[in-house]
Length: 337
Ligand code: ADP
Ligand code: MN
Ligand code: MN
Ligand code: MN
Image 1 (cartoon, protein in one colour):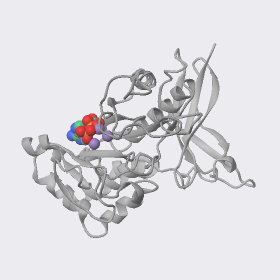
Image 2: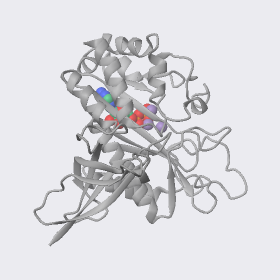
Image 3: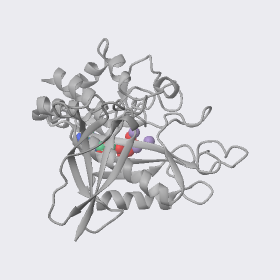
C-alpha cells in the first residue's frame, strides 16, 4: 500500500514569496526523503542550472487527504553543497534560535487575510457595483449581512487542529470579508513552520469554496483597514517581570532598529502604516500600554500583571513569519542577554 506526502516549500516570488507544493507517493513504511524541483519555474534558479533541493524540515498529518497522508514542509537548498538556498529564510530562524534558545523566545502571530470573490475580484461581502456600509459592525460580528465566509473559516480551523498546529483562535475582522487566525505561542522556528502550513491549508480549503485568499497589506484603498500580522513576543525573562518588557521595547526602538525591522515586515508597509486604522505611521516609533496607535502595544493585562509579552503591530499580513521572528529574536535577545 501507499501513502501521499505533500512537499511544501516557499518560492522566490518577489516581492512577496508564495507557497508551492507537489505530491510524492510513497510505499508504506518509506520515509519522505530529500527531493527536488525546477527552480527556474519559481524564481529560484536559472534554466541552465535549474535544480533546487527540498529538505524535509517539518512534518504533520494531512487533514485534507486524511488517512496516513502527510504534509512535509521543506527547506530549499543548493545542489552544489546542500547549503541553504538564498530564498531559504528558515535557515536564519534556526540560527537565531540556536543562539538565543536559552532565553526561550515565544511568538504568537495574528494572521489577517481577505477572502476575494472569484467573479468580482472584490472582498467577500462587497456588492459587485458598490461598497458595503462603513466599518463598525463587522469586527467579531455575527449574522448574514455582516459575515461572509464563516464556513470556510470553520473548515480551515478544523484542518489546522487536525494537522496538530498551534492555532490559538480566529475572529472576523474590521473590514467585511477580512478574517484572522492566530498561531502560537511557539518558538522562533516553530511559529513559522505552523504559520506557513496554516496558510497552505487556508489556500487549499478556499479552493474548494472557489474563494481566493489574499494576504495583501492593503487590499482596499480608502477608508478600510489593511491586513497585518501582529507579532506577540516574549522571552522567559519578559514572562517573569516588567523591566525586560520595557527593555525589549527600548531595544526595538533603538536608533536604526525601526528601519531594520520594517525592511523585513512585508511588502507595501508604507501603504498600511499610515497612522490611521489602528496603526502608527511607518516613519515613527512608539510603544504604550493598550495603545493600538503605537508601533508596539503592551497589553493592558501585561501592565496589570507586571509581566507577559509585547505586541509589535507593524508586520504586514504578507510578511514572511521566519523573517519577522528572526529579526525580533535577534534584536530583543541580544539586548536582554
Ligand atoms: P489581540 O488582542 O491583539 O487581537 P490575539 O488574541 O489575536 O490578540 O492574539 C494574541 C496572540 O498572542 C495569541 O496567538 C497568543 O497565543 C499569543 N500569546 C499569548 N501569550 C504570549 C506570550 N507570553 N508570548 C508570546 N505570545 C503570546
Ligand atoms: Mn487579534
Ligand atoms: Mn486583528
Ligand atoms: Mn493584535
